[in-house]
Image 1: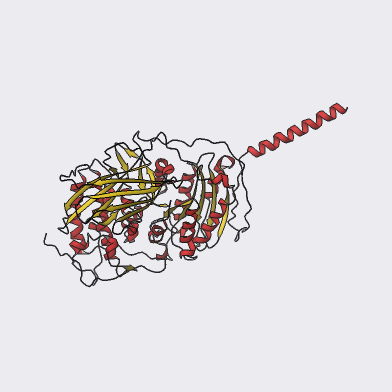
Image 2: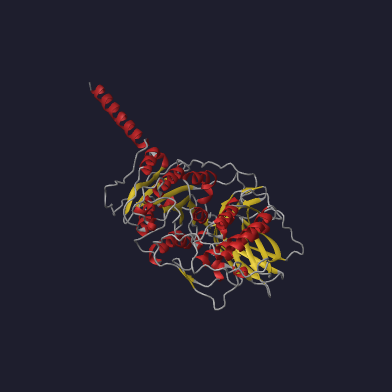
Length: 579
């Protein structure tokens, strides 16, 4: 009898242990957000999960060429193109040099094998500018690495998604929320829908040993999903919850971001060690806040402070009214980047090709110093921190790995304009993820003969001319529509003004609030004449490259030339050229 009792107890114990183990291994639906709730638990308790075994993240299919680098900041200029497509005058910072560069592959003219993490290669070029009739002198910096595609594998991820669910997210994806037409019908595709679908696509790229957490915000912040291992989460249930999210309330960016950072405190320190893990906030928003603190102690300060602790940020802008002016400034922070989404399908395609790259910053604090008795840096094209490049120094905050094909790197170039063609020495210093410092010093002589056909520097100059003209057009056209331009004492003729390095233009004060209405697309008669000449020149020069991806630039030029501007007293024929 006693033996039977012992056997029974043993059987019950083993069954209980087995049941407990099964429950532990079972994935759970840990979604906490209740749309009817108007508050959240501010005393978030630690929910640290046990250590897990390491699973290799999937290797992307790519070229056998070594990877290259692209700079942080804007990874596209889609918001600029979408505004033109929908008949709106884009915001000046919706178009960036690095964003346009990242749409193209550049031959970096690498002359020897790269044996370090980062190896700059240099090419020189000089020309007579067709618009200013001045001599231009350029040096391109090719962004090469020693990383073989077969060796590249991102670290395990701790991803916290901070998703904007404010009322403006319910507005149409292709219109401005603050234009508000009370008689307008519900949008066929809302920004909320695109954001939800884009987020679900991103989740598909997480591995079983990655962690995912979700925070939602309107005028408050809400914990939607704790930071938990993917393999312990019912991911399909999580996706369904996300797709069912509705917009409501005001906008408090900083509260949402702070709430997102709190999730990193819920896991043990060894589970976010940057030697093993990437820690990143993915911030999805239409960037039209009407509440919250936007000063240094607000969102700007939070993003910068987080980067110093090894938590980096990706901003994903949703909709044509996405405010690049604010996010472009935030993205200058170490390890940060941003994307503009113009369709969930296009974003999914981009994630399929580049997700591991976008979450893996590898080079930091890149500084280039020029030593010459006479030659100085005049302008830098292709870095969000170009405004820090003054006199003899060029500064780049972050480099991300970038795909390469046949010796060309996607976005893998920075263009420097110098004052003359005298010999000089360029010394580059940078740090890796662990903070180790490196230096590269090379002497540069301007070539006597220059090859334009197919060269990376010639393509960079072509695209730089495009961005420069477009940015000057936006600066001139935005006067009288929300932005106030400071006039020069002597007005520079348009044929020269269109080529002025935009940071050198007179300052212009933007609308203080971020709650912007749209500006109608406007092209003066002078600019139409200029753009007509430039379009022909651009198309001709583009034929020198084996690149079929100039459609965005050419389509935007075509759209501007065919646009109809309502005549006003401020529209004048400002064409000053006899060409």
